Amino acid sequence: MSDEFSAADVPSIQPDDPSDKSTAEKAAEGIKAASKGVSGAINAGREPGMPLDTLARLVREAPLPSLLVAFLLGVIVARRR
Image (cartoon, rainbow, N blue to C red; front, side, top):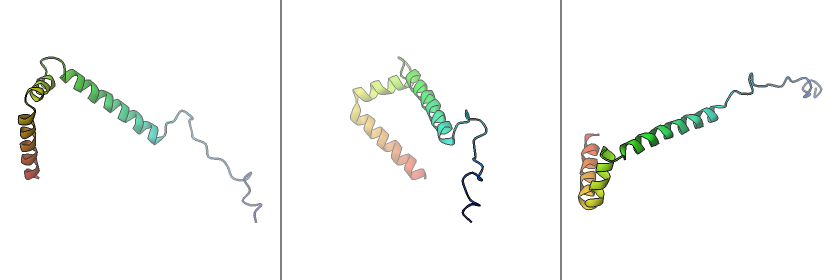
């Protein structure tokens, strides 16, 4: 009975193309591409005169009022849900 299931009789399963990427590798590449895109957008927004630069300057000048505004916006968004 054990002769019927010997390793020589079982065909090995090989991928069609060795260059095929696994799902994890494809997901990792997608995440890397997305993070580069977000990084580029943030860096573009931090250039002088852009909205993130203006916001950063306001927060540096008045951190407590900025914290209050962020808290109130959070409360408004949370109540809508």
